[in-house]
Amino acid sequence: MGSNIRKIISLTRVHNAEVKFGNGPRRLAINYRAYSNANPMQESATEAGAAPVSAVQPLVDSFGRRHNYLRISLTERCNLRCQYCMPAEGVALSRRAELLSRAELLRLARVFVRGGVDKVRLTGGEPTLRADLAELVAELRGAGVRSVAITTNGLVLTRRLPALQRAGLAALNVSLDSLRAERYERMARRPGLARVLAGVDLALQLGYRPVKINVVLMKGFNDDEICDFVEYTRDREVEVRFIEFMPFSGNKWDDSKLVSYRAALRSVFERYPQLTPAPPRDNDTATVWRVPGYAGSVGFIHSMTQHFCSSCNRLRLTADGNLKVCLFGAAEVSLRDALRGGADDAELDALVRTALNNKKAKHAGMENLARMENRPMILIGG
Image 1 (cartoon, rainbow, N blue to C red):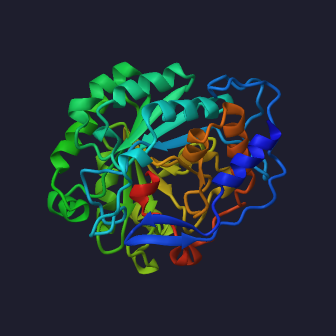
Image 2: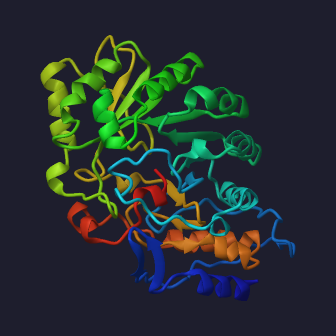
């Protein structure tokens, strides 16, 4: 089995591979360290490759960070065209045959669960475009995932959410960058604000607490709405999360558009001097604050100005089956190709651990990230 693992790792790691995104294929030079951690599992596996892997160790990288959180992109398609996520000209989508099938996705999910993953977030593209989303949620719960969540643009929540709740959906994040209809449409390049707000209200009525609202702040676009979003938390148990604008291919990032955590927090303090910090949560990406007497809270995700890489517990699986151990890293390993090449669960587990062992201590910093190759956000998964 050890020779098979080494063979699959050799076949599936990428050296100067062509990756299609943005305006066409680009070459990514991806160099990994030695694969010294490719240990075969003790348990044998069936030829079909579906036998469970027993007594595997937690997914821990070389810096001691335990990874129990997997973000799975279900589709590259979206019914919005948000400026920070997708280039105006769109992106080249993968052919259906290049995407993970539902059976493949669930097989890989079980491999991650055996490695200690107990939280899965379904992303896209837009995950609610998957007709079988409720079935997927139920099957992931059945596979042993403790918490299944989604990140959505909220456009069809009023139609889809009741069935998703029945299937076991535990939590949801809604992407919403403006509370003003004209501005929302300009950012998303589509109308729909009223539908999104109705979806948030339905989620609260169904008992989701809190509903997290993701707001990408961009200077000169929506930074004048920071306190409007704080007011939105007055009577609603939502957690508005202000996210620093991050560089990805095609989103025309530059630091002049960045609203830093400190600048955003200063804006809130000027109007709400009684703002108080909330207790920190393990592995949380947001620094959370509360206005006394308000039902909700506000958080700040400061990936660019104050990274939180030391507590990262996240892995990402793209819709076409590539594992990304860092959102900002170009390095990817194709679990799809390994799976379709006949890898059993032990070999898939070893491949995940090999990639994880090459995860860096922190990302490269915003100026370097702006010059690095990476997929557009829509092809990674939000």
